[in-house]
Image 1: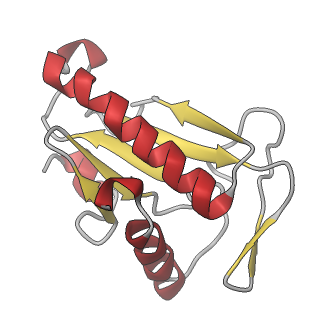
Image 2: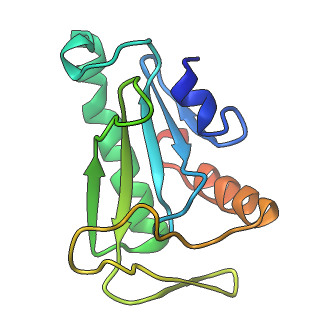
Length: 145
């Protein structure tokens, strides 16, 4: 796995590994269910993703959207492909919510709704809460059934 994937706490954060991509829970939960979609090869530009990697995205995006809609019922979903600090190809997947969401007795906010989100404004989770969230998403993940 490349450095970007390792930075996002792989393998503890792993939801699903595909042939070319991994889906990870984002360490810092911008909103409830924030994920990382990372290309496994060490490439720094989308133009370097191979054809098979692009084709696999159709399945992955459907799996992600079906899963997050089913378990958290987001209002919108944002895909932020920034690659400013972490050079390998990856996308931040941020479910968006018009109202606060409650999950396991904790309230999660979308502080940027309805505008762009500031990735520095996050919902703080301790290790146990993050582990539980990861397992919950993994156990309900569309691509695992």
